[in-house]
Image (cartoon, rainbow, N blue to C red; front, top):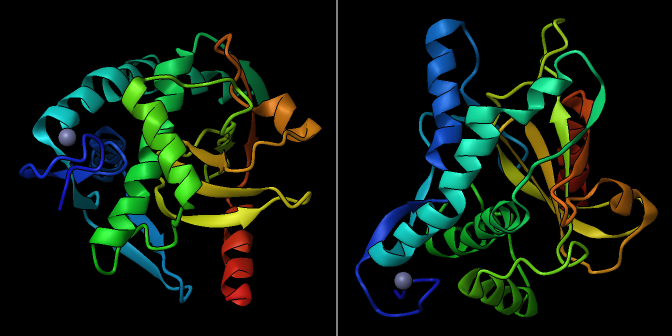
Length: 244
Ligand SMILES: [Zn+2]
């Protein structure tokens, strides 16, 4: 198998799809209080608890290193260490600012591309529901390879913070679930990921709606985020399961 980025037949790392530091939030929290680790919603609707972040042979050492330097390290420094979701602890919505647009967006697109290939390369994958079209594969690969995040309306990213299940009103940072393909009420297709305190919608269609436009990550480093309960994701999983 070739590296998914440089496409050379090199020895491949056991690459994570969602960066390990998001799982570390779970491990740390497990020692602090009793929570369920994380849930994988399989296509047959069963939830699987898992013990560690899924990995798959995807990237050569050089490309893995570049991904870490250019996307994952900036993501950890901003999203985990600075923790911009703190503003939502006592508020139901906020416009987050100071996001490094290119590294942040390419981090998410690299997750999406890795999930697609993990589904192809690893049997019984946590990411089995992710399947991108050839056109999206080529386009996202080129954006990653050239480190060009493109305009905000190209693969727009929308996030909603997840309300903790207890009554404290905080953000639920310890939840990671397997992704789900879905469409919004206007028929726009996206893939829903859940990690780092948010449900992330990665839209695949280039047409913006007013709802997407008002919420998606912008080139000035801002993004409007609402805090919502977890149920919509479960409903979404139900709907996907019924459709199948
Ligand atoms: Zn490579």
